[in-house]
Image (tube, rainbow, N blue to C red):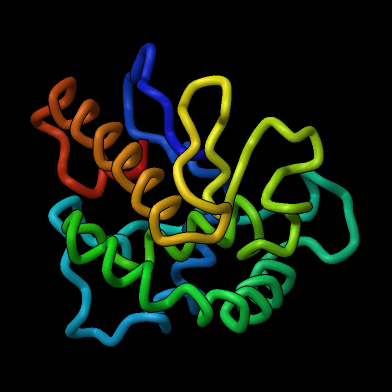
Length: 176
């Protein structure tokens, strides 16, 4: 994912991060952070409404909220390994650590889906899946440097949305 510059923003906010990202936040990735450790300058991720995950649309076994919940529970175990770098990057960039953790979970299942740090097509790299066609790669696939690079790209994207839509709430700007 590791956000790219937005060529054209939508007319209204939408959940561009994928249907499972927000439910993952709400179902346990926030457990990485104590309530007092939430320090976001970009809106409250816990205030975002999670979209429904439909089994009808995908017609696959293991879909819906039960599958999302199970994925979140298994990802929590792998995410613990990255808790300190996630918190450090989040604090430095004024991001909610749960947002970074959710992106890591959504993009790579906290490393489970990667082969030597790469996706199957060897186009995207690292926990947060930075596209090598659009960005230089810094650090190893699971390093704090990688998390910092992708989180900086996220902050730039959010600020771009803020500039285009200054009347939107922070939560609306965060959803795009």
